[in-house]
Length: 413
Image 1 (cartoon, rainbow, N blue to C red):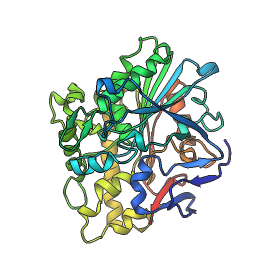
Image 2 (tube, rainbow, N blue to C red):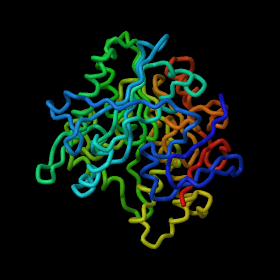
Image 3 (cartoon, helix red, strand yellow):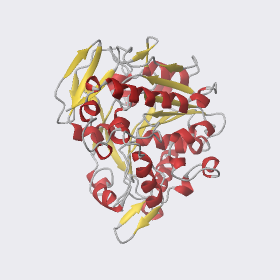
Image 4 (cartoon, rainbow, N blue to C red):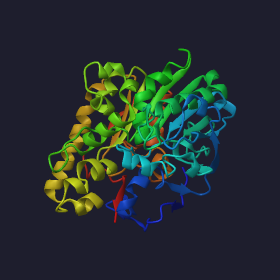
C-alpha cells in the first residue's frame, strides 16, 4: 500500500487531524449531500479519468433522466486476467420525494446528463492501480450515472412538471448496452453501489444475477446502503416520510421485489432491512455503524431538532453528550439487529465498522491505503476481496465506538 496525498475536491474541506489514533475529515455541513454523491472523495496522486458515454438508443425506450436527457455511464476496459470480469457500480446521490425537489434536481447532474461531468476519477474499488485496488484493478469497471432520484427503481412521469421518473428503464438500458459491449461473456461479475446506489444494488442484485449463466460468478456489494426505518430524535420517522414520497411519486412499487411487497407496504419495501434476507444472490454489506448521512438526515435532521440540541453532535461526534451517544449506540444496535438473519447465510459477507462515515468503498483513503480503517487488522478492500473470491468467510462487526482507532471519521462545520 502506498502513502496517499489527499486532495479534497469539495470546496469546504479545511483540514484533517488525528484524534486518539483516528483521522477526522472536516466539511461544511451543507456539503453532506455532496459527500454522498462522491463530491467528497479524497483523490490520491493522479487518478484515472474516465469519459462519459451517453446511451444513444435509450430515448427510444423512454429510458431518460428526470429532464428527459439521455442517461450515461463511464467504462474503463479490463485487460489481462480481468478482461472477462466486470464490476458495475451504481452511482449514489440521494433521492427526490416531491415535485419541488425533483424539479430542482433535474437542473443538476443528478437529474440531467446535460450537467454531468464529461470525465470522472475512478478511485477506490474503481481504481486501475493494483496498489490501491489489488483485486479488481484490471477488470472492466463501470459507473452508471444516477439521474432519476429513486435508486434506479421508478417508472412514471409528471407531465405538468415535465418530469420523467425512469430509473428502472435507465437500469435496463445501461445493462443491455454493457451486455452488448462484452459483459454477456463475463466469467465474473460484481454489482456494487454506494449510498442510494447501495440501496439500488440490493434492489437489483437478483435481477443482475439472472442476466448470466450459472457458470458465471456473480455477487453484489452494498456500501452505505443499509438505510434503517429508524425513529428520529423527535420520535418521528423522517426517512420513512421521505421514502413514502419517493415511492409514491416515482411509481417504484412495481419494481420492488415481490417477496417483500406480497406482505409489506411499498414504502417498507424500499428499506433494505426488509429486503436483504430474501436476496438469493451472495451479497456483501459494508456500512458504518454510525453512518454520517443517516445521523444528519434521518436521525437528527434540523426538522426533528427545532431547538438545535443536536446541532453540535450532528456535526461532530466528539461533541455529543452522554445521552446523545447512548442514542447513537442504540442506532448501532438496530443495524446489528437488521443484519442478524442476513449474516447467518454462509454466502453473505459483512463489514460493519464503528466509524462516523459514509461510503467507504469508493474513497481511496478508506478502501485500501496505509491508514485505512480495519477490523481484525484487515482493510475493507481485503475483506471484500477475500469474500468475493471465496478466500475466506467475512462476517466482521466492530466493537462499539470509541474502541476503533483506525476510523476516518467525518466532521462537519
